[in-house]
Image 1 (cartoon, rainbow over the protein chains, first blue to last red):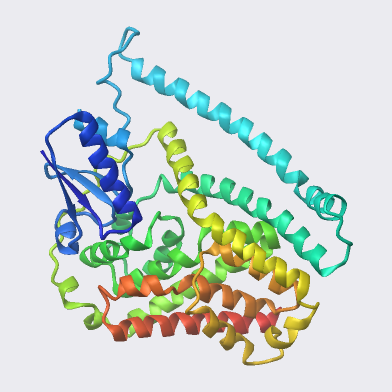
Image 2: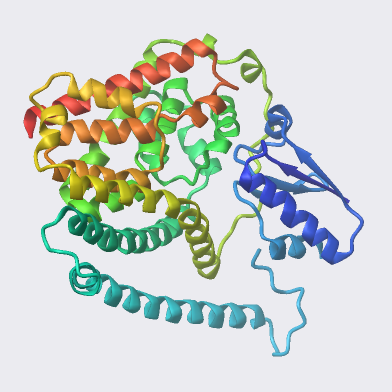
Length: 76
Length: 361
């Protein structure tokens, strides 16, 4: 499983990454968490507000940081 | 986000998820109602409390500088914070209905003038964090939103801020708040339109113009009312949590001005009789940045000491609308000359507002 956390690195993007990593750890799933700050890549995925999170290429949330609970919901 | 069918369910039938969320919602509404009552009870006691605290409890003489300053501080700090909590919550609910993606769709391909007005209005209600400025800019460009229309959005979003509006309303009355709203939107519309006329598209960084963006990916963002309340509560925690220090600092400065600057003193430097007071306050305001919540108490104190309304509004707008961090972020997508023009046009717009109000009020 590949999880992409998109954002230029502001506080909300860091929070998103943190919540994703915590959820992955709690769910005990093997997943690669990648931070994407390149705007061209972000735009190619059709994302126009950050932070955003995608799992295996499917964008799950746009424009806000998901809570750990929300991420856990997607991982199940 | 609201998919509850994965969890084991004790009740029968397929409305289990609904039952759970209905009782969750009922709880939220109940708590909310109680919260409102408590809020109002406390709010109405703030002024008497501040007087009692300053003059009876601590025992400072009425009419003294220190007394004035402390009473202002003790009254305004909880007042502003409480107003903030209420407003941010309500606006959070409003914002849960609007997304950048939806705004982008609305503005795509609209011609200027109509687009400028729409963009300025949408900038007020679209949840938008300035770190997201680059993706937003790219999104608007790739959707065919004219450059000037995008600028109208980028100008109104930080400046015509619901926090500013409600604080202005709470501290200075609905007329000042309405004034700020109307002039703020006007500056955004006109400045954006002017920039559109200037045909500065080649001053957008080349890499932005070469991006091929994918189809807008909205993700599944459907929200129940319960989700909306949670979202709004989250944004109160987030925004008030970030902003309260500025508020307290701003009120402290305001208290100092209120207590120690003589009545009418500011009329000499910020009054409308001196032609240079408006440009001066705009120039001072540009490099300064605090969010709206922090600057309003200062505004209140300045007005109370005789500064002219136009000058003070101009100062407030230039503090909020233009910020160094935002320029740094925009530099990624705009060439230096375009940024300079952006600052210049917005500054001129604010200047005009300042002069206009000093002239008619």
